[in-house]
Picture 1 (tube, helix red, strand yellow):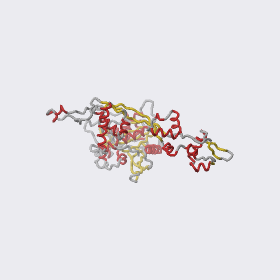
Picture 2 (tube, one colour):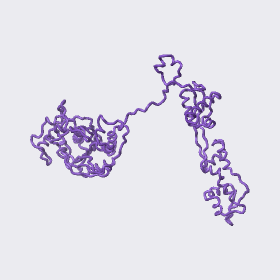
Picture 3 (cartoon, helix red, strand yellow):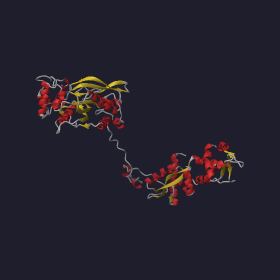
Picture 4 (tube, helix red, strand yellow):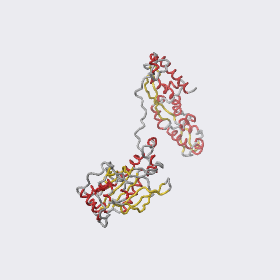
Amino acid sequence: MSVEADKTRAEALLLQTIGSEGSVADTYEFSLANGLSHELVVGVMKSLLVDAFVADTERSTSFYVLKDEAKSFLAQGSPEIQVFRAIPAEGVDRKALEAAVGAATLKVGQGACMKNKWIRLDKADGKFYRNVEEVKDEVTEMLRRVEQADGALSAVSNDEANTLKRRKLAEVRTRKSYTLSKGVNFALQRKKQAAGLTKEMLDGDAWKKETFKPYNFKTMGLTVGGGHLHPLMKVRAEFRRVLMDMGFQEMPTSRFVESSFWNFDSLFQPQSHPARDAHDTFFLSQPKYCLTVPEDYYKRVHDMHENGGFDSIGHGRGAFKRETSMTNILRTHTTAISAQMLYKLANQPGGFTPQKYFSIDRVFRNESMDATHLAEFHQVEGVVADYDLSLGDLIGIIKAFFMKIGITQMRFKPAYNPYTEPSMEIFAFHPDLKKWTEIGNSGVFRPEMLRPMGLPENVRVIAWGLSLERPTMIKYRLNNIRDLFGHKIDLEQTRSAKLYRY
């Protein structure tokens, strides 16, 4: 018989039983009596509940389930009865008894027989002898009563229940079933209900003859498919957690527009540097210039650019113009924020104190867009300011950070940066690509950048940075950055993307 046929039969039997007897006392007993699975009966019951044909009361029934050892007792007798029966009137030594019943049965059965004084061990000849002629296998009889009563707890006394528990022959389980009675819409046969009101029903009188399915206001609605973090944000959250665990403090980086002074000049980057050209930087047309910069600091930066200092010759006379410094741009790196934080650190009340800063935010470059470049991307930057730091400290911190995100094979290569000396490119071995890949840049900030800020001469500042997009593309196996960032990304990818550890 098909499942649908069983459901139809179960529904008819339930309604007939409730109609004639007033209720179904126990759905489990009902299913056994009618040769139906309890799961199917409960499913039909829930359907009838929705239409208010029946009302239900939940009930719980505890019962015994015999374990495999107990089932072997029922087939062969308990260990003690097996041992007793294996001992002849003339006695038997231990070796022969073990061969007859088995070591495991003898181990359990001998102890029980001795406790019940059914047998004795004669120390003179080393044989076991019976003390009585007949015994009763009470344990097996108890198990048989449980089996015949379908596991009912009432089949055994409290002492017998303790025996079952102690000898681990049965376990108590709980079964959930239901008592059913008539609902407000009870009928012996269920009429198909209309799912909703239609225009055709309203055009005539058909709606008057229909029975409508009531709305279930308690049912759960569809899960809203929202609230998924973008893969970039997942990786950003992981990086942010790692840096905070390392004791770094997050810098406020919510300002996308910066003056050229903070973005370039404060970093001792020449005003004639190619990176400051319109081909690499976005300049604002309105407002074109910033309103103000710290004048005393501006004068020290101006002097450093033109005249040098601290063993630097500077960039030469006439190389620094205020109009260029005050020009507004979209920041090309978050190091502009790092410069402002270091300036505040140098001039805070009480003087300099060692600090560790980090930022993860968006930066902008006027570059040609292709599969690996966009006009905007996210920069991860770490800065440490302390006394007498060295290149070794920088390498140690970089290794500690990357090891925490799962990158263990690293190399460093000397490089040039306008505002760090010495400088290093960071390479990591990518296990999927099977090659060394550049993942970041680093260096020690130049004295020409730090001394105009007011930092003491024995203070060193080490820094490193990388883009957020590159490691994210590698881990999510994307070849085109536009598949990761922008208005054309696949939303399904955002929903299904997992957080990768590196």
